[in-house]
Image (cartoon, rainbow, N blue to C red; front, side, top):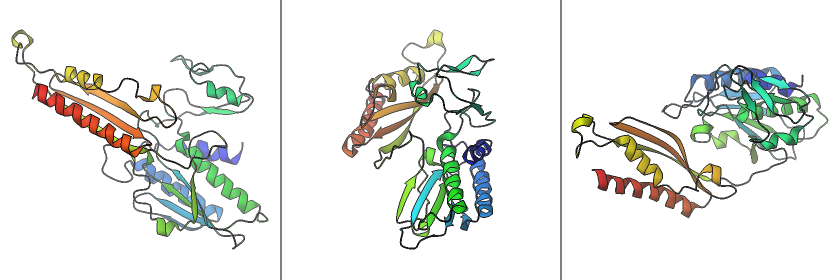
Length: 307
């Protein structure tokens, strides 16, 4: 098994789901556990200046083999999305992928479908790592961590390859917007840095989008339905009105490229209380501010209508 795969399979065994409700960094204990695990691994490889901050930021250095080169930084994040559980991951290697649907879980009848995810057809003949379909795999971004450390190990094993100092940073809570918040850039000390994250081989992204999150809390009034006329205020139905007021085509399933969107992450409620969680994305800063203003406008209109 290749060293990068061995590393990856070890890392996905550690649950590092980010917690968007937590005020701490890192937001989950698993991230700090993985941070300390990686620091020990980096030391055993022979990297220098290895440290873990109280907030779970891991840094280390591969000393220069040739001083005339700039200091390059390589960055990946420790956490995984909270959208699907990253606990008890059961990875499996599909060798020499044949281009057909992959049965992930016979009991639950879960497939990785080529119709739904045609991009897997780009990897016919390759080995693919999958889960049993009930959890995240965690390749975003433990594949990045594994790739970085495997690359540094290759440089260590091949001292004839000229390179400047390589600085490494593994950061927490990228999935909830805290990834760079407490990164000490001066201490990191790279002239140029690259984040190794999900995407096709050969893709280099040099731009970023503007991002925000919004929580809409709706207070209703519960009254016995037999005596509710003119009195009951159903928070669930108001939540539906809020969602109906959003532009229906400006969602992730209908947008691409530079097109911004609203993404409804959750919508839960009772007659008395409902909560909607959204994220907002747009590359254009003016459009981004417009999206936030639209959310506030909808809220104001619903408050005016319902009190």
